[in-house]
Amino acid sequence: MTDYFFRGTIADLDPSVQKLIQVEAERQFRRLILIPSESTAPLAVRSALDSAFQNIYAEGYPPEDWRLLKEDEILDYEARLGEYRRFSDPRYYKGVEYADIVETLAQRRAAELFAANGLTAEDIFVNVQALSGGPANNAVYHALVNPGDTVMGMDLIFGGHLSHGSPVNRSGKYFNIVPYTINEETEQLDYEEMHRLALEHRPKMIIAGYSSYPWQANWKAYREIADEVGAYLLADIAHVAGLIAGGVYPSPIGIADVVTTTTHKTLCGPRGAMIMTHKPIIARKLDRAVFPGEQGGPHVNVFAALAVALKLAHTDQFAALQQQIVKNCRVFSDRLAERGYKIPFGGTNTHLMNLDTKSIKGVDGTTLSGDMAARVLDLAGIVVNRNTIPGDRSALNPSGVRMGTPWITQRGFKEKEVTELADIIADLLQACTPYSDRSARVRSARTKVDFQTLRDARARVQKLAESAGIDYEPTNHGAPHFPHRDATGVDVMDWVLYEISGSKAREFVNFVFSSDAETLKPGQ
Ligand code: DSN
Image (cartoon, rainbow, N blue to C red; front, side, top):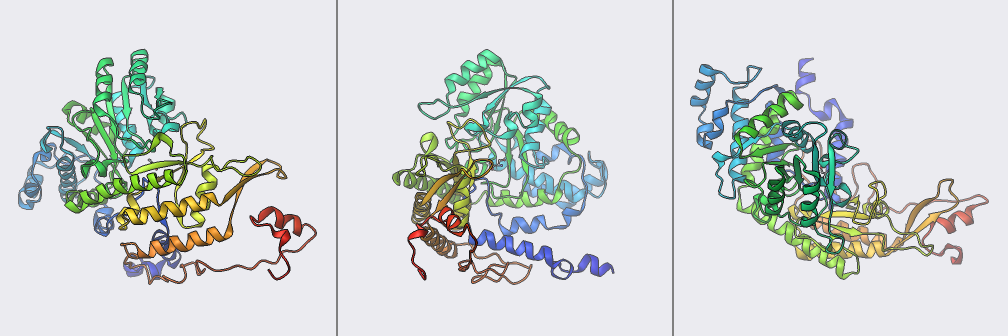
């Protein structure tokens, strides 16, 4: 019984979940994923996640002075275990002697990786316990401001983040949020207007950092504004942490009071977050805000995986990857602009860009929404998300899509492949004919897409995906069915035959097909 439960393979114990894991792995291989916040974690990072550290609780923190130890001192087991026996540690559980070491290792590697602007690793306090980006930002609010205080953050519609004060998020409900946006003419951040807003509203905290705004932040401009009104400056670098570590985006370390980041985006680590500061008093408040303020036991296996990711992020290969991500994004964005698409914000110098879909209009004047575009692209094997762009009024019906190059660059894409990918997207969106369904009770907009163009796009995507550097991942979850069928058993390019009958067949066919079905002769 014990063996059945604890030593059985997933294939024996739960083939249903095994199959789900397998089909998801195949999806990730077959599709070209352009969600800028997603990336594939190296297998070494994933095997650390799947380790014995997963099994334990470790509420509290490792000894405070260990953060000053160098890596070889942290890994000096005799010294660390001796100290642990003699002095114990500030945690609420025993059995954490190795958890202390692995957490300190992750903290130290983070401090070394992000030391910048004249600061050394010893100057930087790192908390690796926040469970993800939202909780990390919540912990900063908890540490530095009180409910009802005024906080300034980038408006979600213009590229900010939910936790920067969106009205539907806890941050927007508990604090008096003053959102800032962009200059309508330049489509870039308007620091003068931000300055004016800060003088008028005297925020206690200003949040910098974005989820879809594609240009680099000017950290010093933010700092000057924050200093003038006596506000804390929080830099949320979740999207660009890897770019900063790779030297292709300026670092806010030592400029912002607090820096938060997720660890699973461009940083290529496990799903999690870090909070950094160079100010000891703030560091203490942040630690208390994370635990016990926000959460209980941290995920110790994530510390192990994060330590691995941070070691990899120190390599030349990682820096080269980050450079290529930015280069690819510019080439991709420029190519779409050349093909006639409007690029909101006027371009990019980071890992992400946006595309305005509403310039594609049907004969009845219906415009292509971000959601329709994302669904059509998904049918062709290109994964993006709908996103608000300047000009949108609500996050409910965005008229753009957001795309980024981290994942495809990890797969080995260079300028040639991203240009081909931009062409596939341009061809496919051009082949869309949006229309409004006036017969529906609630009027709804949809799109038709030219069938041949869609088929061609799928074949071109498949070719690019199969030629890309990272293979279908090695798996202990069973042999993949790749390449002819996906694991659900459906041939990816299969034809499907429908027989349509009934008194409204003609009306139906005319309505749903993008081609002129009425002119077809029997057999065509
Ligand atoms: N949801 C993430 C993104 O896609 O940008 C941010 O947390």
